[in-house]
Image (cartoon, rainbow, N blue to C red):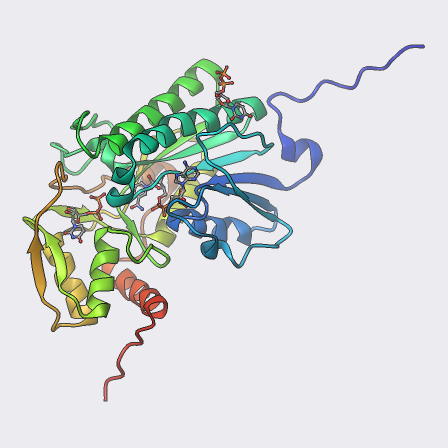
Length: 338
Ligand code: NAD
Ligand code: UDP
Ligand code: UDP
């Protein structure tokens, strides 16, 4: 009796094309701030199936509650530093704490998440032929000497400082992405994300926008870390998600900066929050942390030309949206003017 062999599997394996018409998308760190907004956007498309993996270190199921039980959605408790077997077409790899207080809390774990976690996701992408996007960071530029920062700039990073677990971790993650691309032909995408803010940030996240908004609503002094002249450029989360999806679905590997070039000193930010929420609240200058970058502003020419992307929401438009969300979660409604 002759045995007929099954036809060979297509290579690279394209699970969606082989078994079904939907696109199966993995989002690591999808229970976090940016990840959960990304999931909301991906779920709007009925052709997408979304799988989230998260260890809930800084994220929460609450951020995804509207999708739990949805037939196109799956949530798995998993740590990216462990091997993962799944069949997917795209991987948005976000898993990593992003706020300095959380990434410094267990720095060895932060490095493992960036290095072993990214290696595992690349191994998975290689096995199934998936396209993988890494959410890298403006921190790869360190305390930048070039301003604004272009993608060609190699950065000014302290390799042994308290921020290095994050900065250098992301730099190694980028290296791994490019080595898998060159050595194994993987389809990669690298986004260098600049400071992002919006609803659903952890209230006690420690990042500057969430701190100032929560402090102003609670009537506490706004803690400006010295000297207050350091700058950041803040991108609203819906703009960020739009940029990430364009990068994933486009033809360019990156790295591509995604951020809002509007640049503010921390003093200016504090004044803007004060004016919006409570003009009576005082500012308090407090001690800064080591290696705090003095300036940061993205050059977004590439995102603009290659992805047709630019941010739409200014800081003055985005802050009130965040205030509304924080008031709801803190249970402090806005006082009605008489
Ligand atoms: P976040 O802390 O809200 O989200 C990170 C998510 O990853 C959380 O849900 C957390 O539980 C999960 N996670 C952490 N370690 C994990 C692990 N080992 N295994 C599985 N899950 C793990 O942060 P965010 O602001 O949403 O940032 C998302 C991504 O964007 C991160 O990769 C971050 O480095 C990058 N990024 C963010 C910003 C920003 O301003 N928010 C700036 C630059 C880069
Ligand atoms: N890996 C994974 N899921 C997969 C395939 C690989 O988590 O579906 C992990 C695997 O455990 C390994 C890493 O990804 O540690 C790198 O995999 P690769 O195949 O590139 O390297 P190797 O296993 O040969 O070291
Ligand atoms: N910062 C501040 N007050 C705070 C928290 C942060 O003045 O309560 C400053 C901090 O010194 C840094 C900037 O805000 O210069 C951005 O810090 P954040 O932790 O939000 O993000 P980073 O860009 O440093 O990762």
